[in-house]
Image (spheres, rainbow, N blue to C red):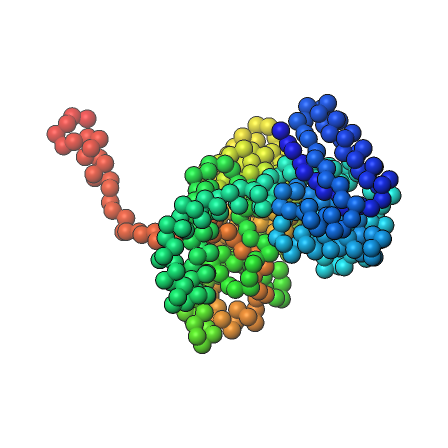
Length: 424
């Protein structure tokens, strides 16, 4: 059963009645449609009442701004939610939506004007959609992360507390950072054995939480839209006391647009001898739209698993292909998106903020720290660590290939097929 706990902060009885009735009607309609839903609505007619009741147990809040006690008084509730790290989705419903600062809007689900917004479609549908993502149950103060953090605190940190106290005596800042890594490692372990398929957005951290260059940073050329990925080892990207990296050159691998690779696979086209970067497309100008098809799950490790999304991607691309050729081309595309087509391409899936493409391990460059700052913008996307490991593994395997002189095997084969002395 879905139990959604909402708070409305509103002083007008008529508006409270509209919200109450809408929630009851909405719940009844959903129940009649087979959705097991309960909406628990907490009504607060004053800001002080809301400030006392608000906590991390709510799945959403609807806040009016204007109160008799002062203009924009409702902002105090929003500010408490924001500053208390309750991580509650907030919708502002007010007669003065223009009073919301531009800097606050990105942190609000929406800002709606009274008399124009529909409670069921604009508010309740929105909160149900958010609830169905699991966001408030995972990141909310009572969610899975909080539960796991509590387990880590009790089972892993407290038994080792004396050791960490000794670390803290010698270097507080370093110990705090190490303890954060320690905790995150334990959180990640919760999902290590999870075989669920990943969504494209899980491949990236966007926007990056820092401007520091890291292994897996996606950077853009300042003069054009060409993109590449940093593949220097993390140890080489450590900043020394003199402000330089431990390495004098940074390794970059080009990202080629998906169209060029797909055309090569499906039509036997080749761009050998072309400008190594000419196949890239400007960000936001993808001409073959894969986004709809790629919105489904992708393999957590493309080299390990192929799944239903590949069929969906294939179907989207091959809509006009004759039926007799479709099967062969689908198989080729499965190999491409499963990173099995060739050992020097690695697929980066498309999202709303990134057009995706293919890493080409054959197209690598290096540059110094100064050249990097002159030629490239700061990282604007970071590939997630789990996926960086797979990329590095495939990159290393590609350049670790060993060859040997070809051996004349003709006589050996002939000797096995027709040993000496046997009659022909």
